[in-house]
Length: 288
Image (cartoon, rainbow, N blue to C red; front, side):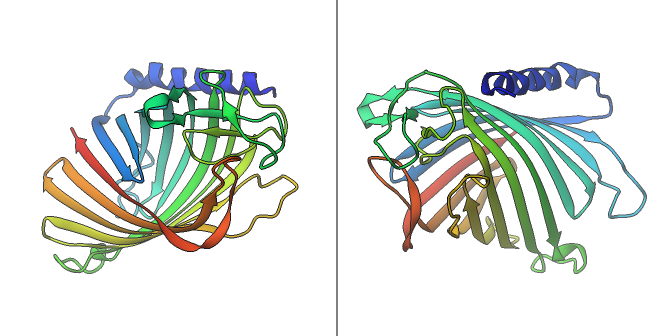
């Protein structure tokens, strides 16, 4: 399938999902707005809408809450805009299956010296990437699976809840303006080529019955261009997370991250280096 056809297919699928949502009965819906910031400088706003549809329910506690969540997300930063839709199926209390996609484009933001879309006509890491403002469409299709467990289900109590979660995702990312093996960068995330990538996530968290209601340790692993002719060294981020709940619906999450990834300033190529500080990130989330 051509890249342009793939982008059209993702867009049509998103539209069909959104148009058929009112047909579902016995569902609940919610929305949220996130303000995301980080140092070194990063800023983004996200608005989301979630429709929760009861599905595959049973009497057993493992199946009583089974559902399908359809999530729409609009993200906007100083250099890019992204629209995404995900379907998240909970077939059993300890598992989630995700299928989704997103589309986006980017532009230059001269006051910060940033570009949301960069492209090269050479292989990744060979030559400098140059701005390609609004020159094409970034697209991503993804499939993932999560396993999760909360000890508070077995040992009820205010101080007995330890959350364990692991998530694994295979995604195909591409840019309509790039040919085979031509490097591009979207939203300052590092140079990539059209192809399959992998992301893994591992979280151990402790829930607290106080305003600081969660502390957690997170490990994220990455592998790029899985089917390409390059090696795939172990790339990872490690984060320490704290979440403060001001009141029902308003949360502030703070994460301090370290990484063994580095990005070349000229080529934008992502490679492995010694473990080092990466950033401090904050996320203010209001749910309604």
